[in-house]
Image (cartoon, rainbow, N blue to C red; front, side):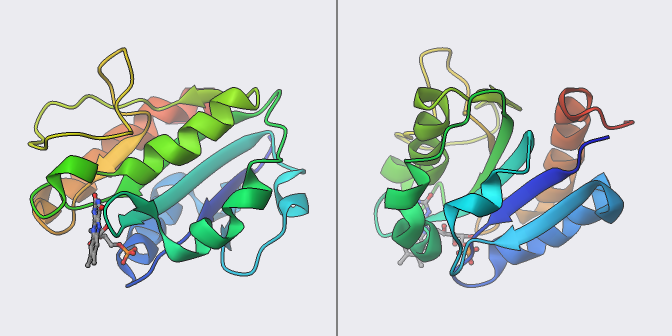
Length: 172
Ligand SMILES: Cc1cc2nc3c(=O)[nH]c(=O)nc-3n(C[C@H](O)[C@H](O)[C@H](O)COP(=O)(O)O)c2cc1C
């Protein structure tokens, strides 16, 4: 089985915590987890299966490490890669920009030939706008809100991992 490359960035540690839960759910033997802090594009090359995670900051901007890496990120060829995305945001405080980061990263993956799995229903969230929501009405990846709905996070993560598992050849 091919290992999953999990790449994430976090400003205040909330995404770090979610990554720890994900590692437990997926099994640490099934993935390599890499913080996007001080990273280079060649780190992505070995992985056919990818999980990308980030928070959104400052009215729809990428988490700071993703933001710094973004120009290089846009040069990655995702052809033949299967990619699942997750993002943290605040649907009340930043209702017009809820988890925009998922959409910004996801668009690059799609444009550069990647196959996105793990799209997520918008049911159960209240926000005004999100770059993560596409024409099909789904978030491009799992949306988590530790600021307003922390009680849903574990459940959402467990369901999402079940949803993506077959695409990554994981036993669910
Ligand atoms: C100054 C500030 C700006 C934020 N901007 C957004 C935003 O535009 N969209 C959003 O969905 N969440 C926004 N958030 C919420 C964060 O994404 C959320 O708190 C997240 O859990 C932080 O995760 P991290 O600690 O891993 O960076 C913002 C939070 C702060 C404090």
